[in-house]
Length: 285
Ligand SMILES: NC(=O)c1ccc[n+]([C@@H]2O[C@H](COP(=O)([O-])OP(=O)(O)OC[C@H]3O[C@@H](n4cnc5c(N)ncnc54)[C@H](OP(=O)(O)O)[C@@H]3O)[C@@H](O)[C@H]2O)c1
Image (cartoon, rainbow, N blue to C red; front, side, top):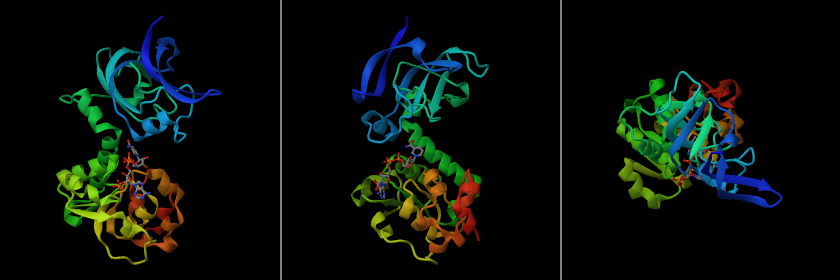
């Protein structure tokens, strides 16, 4: 019998709990690659999973850990061989499939990427899934040809995980960055990351009005709801807004409906990976 240390979440008649356990390797879930995990992060979802504050875990028992780096031990995939250093981000790992808070993980090779040359595993996990998400947002802006010459970029939830990295990435890419936060006391921190202006989320407390002034050319939104409605309503024509919160956009809260905001100027649908389900599409000009 081969066992390793893992954090296991259980939910049964005795309640919801997380504990360190000796986990039997034969009890790992199916997958064509087994990885010796070296590093993971504490993602927001991991916090929710471990405390049970939100139902992010979909199967019990569960090993949390939505991301990790590690070294391939065994592989039935031609893409990976023993000794390869790999990264895992997302794919429902730590929610529906055993995750990175364990010394071993077994999963589908499709979910893994090779650790880039020159990057240390701890560096990859310091960036984490939040930083990775921010970079995907910046890449979406670049893919659609939105450039700093078109105007400023706004980041909402700027002092949070996705937002803070987004501020730094946008600044590094040459943008004038407006950091939108509920915590203006974090202004110095946000400026140290690269924010040029701090905007208090309070400004977005009431629903946006139609035909609002165009204030930014791009945005990375990590908040959704009214905040997102404001960001969209003041986005310049032909600009783009990748959303860290796609799901909230799909559900299209009333504030996002074309009749109640300046959707005719919104081109965010271009970035959406499910445009047919997104009511924003109806508002394109
Ligand atoms: N973290 C990831 O790996 C990841 C990956 C993909 C998608 N996402 C999604 O991205 C979103 C943000 O995730 P995160 O990890 O950055 O979370 P986070 O660290 O908790 O940051 C969220 C930020 O949103 C702002 N915020 C929270 N509640 C608010 C409210 N009621 N009104 C206005 N602003 C509010 C706060 O910003 P201020 O402190 O600046 O006010 C908070 O720091 C979530 O929807 C998440 O599901 C996250």
